[in-house]
Image (cartoon, rainbow over all chains, first blue to last red; front, side, top):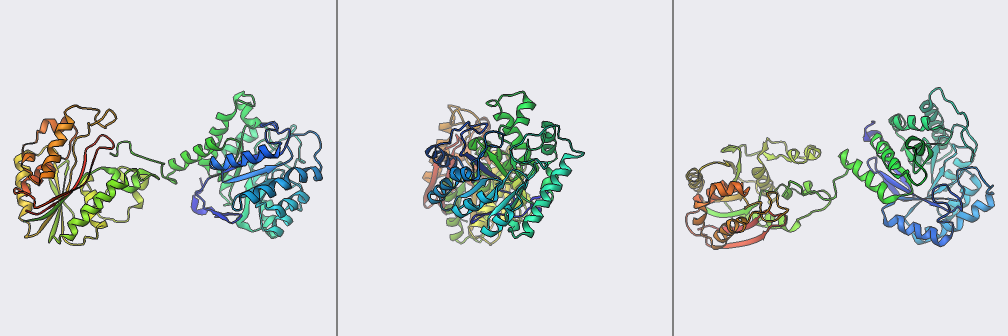
Length: 294
Length: 230
């Protein structure tokens, strides 16, 4: 993989994260119908409880979203704002220094969320709304530039094909990153994401995982969002509740290949995988070593 | 003449880097640092560091702890560049460095199978290095003091270690001359030759003794002590 020396320091909120730090971004859904948690944190109290919990478990970032990725009942801009903005404001009030990411593709929503205290706009839909960088620049926050293969938000891939999926991922995400910087987003706050499953069949997602080092090489911090996704389910013939091991295995591979931010449901387990990989790479001391050393 | 003796265990985990994020035994490290400091403050003209190894030899005075042998990922962080030393000497050299000692040092290893008579002779020779010789003895007791000990529990370990502790505490090192080699080997007490070098170097009784640490947190008997010269 690319040496850590080629990687830049990532700034999010008031924090600076070095190239060797591997960050857990904990998912907090304000949706009644997201695929994995099925509305577990739809109630604001439950969602705040989850924030307390994931921070206790070692999350570095929370990622708050109000619209599921899958197709379904329309969620209007107004409704998305209603679901997320007061909650982001409440989390910000409770944790002044916490890095808050918001999962939205709409600039109108992003603007309200940034005003409420968000530090990072996590655009999973590949820059569909071209005005998102403006908002990120205006508020001095970060932006995730992802690859959805040009698909509109909340659509599923159907017979998608690529001559070279990683080439397409690189072309689109790097172009978005450059555009974001041109429009005034702080380059030290730009992240790229291959967006597993988005605009990809499972073969494509496996391919971008295998070749993730190519995405790390240009130097932008790479985020991966793997948790319980369909490519893992299809690979292992595993139902939605049976994908944790596959998720963690993929997490380890991506970490080894240089990814730096890991969007996840299970913080404790993800943290352990990342700490293990960091120790194997010699980038983090083990917690406590005594065996054979007495 | 012996100006004073510091005794510390040659446990790799004395090197703070090796225990990861957890300091594990900060009190042991502090005790060793205090003993080494005591030795330096006694103003010896030369300090001889003694520890057991695969051969009896004098090592280059600029030698350093071979951290990479125990934590390969840590090797590159070692700032000093001298030749790598056997573990007890490497740890001893580091203790002297950390204690601010810059005077002459003699790094003496003793073969782990060296007979008692040879160890005693070596000690007697070290004693005559100068009028004020400081000794840093890197030795510990058995490694068989509990079920989780490196050598498992051996009921003979307690008495074996008590002999060492009593001798050091009393300042009369005579009983160390007769340490049982076979038993020492079975109890993984690698420090045996170093203890006998000490006995040879200090035939008279120490003027005073201080025990800085005495415990077996991992089933290995650690003793940190300071002996004032005869």
